[in-house]
Length: 286
Image (cartoon, rainbow, N blue to C red; front, side):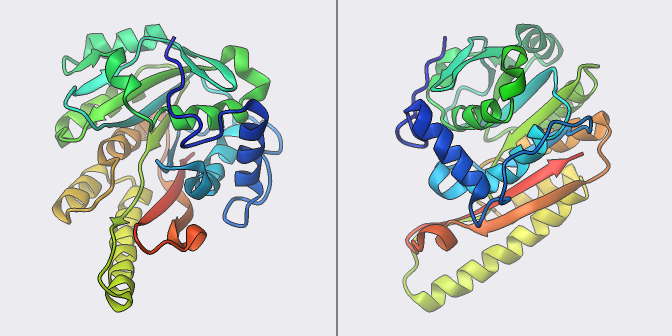
């Protein structure tokens, strides 16, 4: 069992406090304003959600998770993050634990990826060092309360230097698996550090917003190659280029023709901190 490591830092450790924290993310002025209403029969093939503290990124994430909570339940949620170490492209074979309880890993789907992609391996140690997948699981559990016993995930972390062809192939294997799949891709948008003056900060922030717009347009058009070239060519500080490419390619094969930006804001708008500004975006593939 992979025990939670980052509770108490990125999100609340106590069950009740965590439940309240996620509820507040939904009803926040920056969130959708309400909890998921009722599970329906519509399909959500994938979402893109931020990678940060609930206190600043939670409301943005809530937009996409509201869509999941109101859609039909998937057989397996492929949760794709970025590997900050040099371990490469790794799946986790262990079940995971959060303050909400156990989340089961779909070993069968993991084996499918291992058998199909020679550059994907099992490494549970690598997953213990990463927070990006862990912080998504309580949100997923929260919107899956009616199906918790059936909830299965496949945690997958990608090397930061994965080339486009490998990411494309990974997305295609996931999309062609003939399983009822939903992909959860984890990535922030532009990220800027401390600025020398307010004028420089304002100019840089506006430039970052413009860079975001170019990437958002390509994501919404599901142009994975265009997005990859744009993000790497512009030197964007997105920390989840690979997960976004995998999500786009998988969701194409799962039936999505476009994606939709649900919410876009910066951390500064919540915490008024000019020392470090992170832009967040929430997308849904239907």
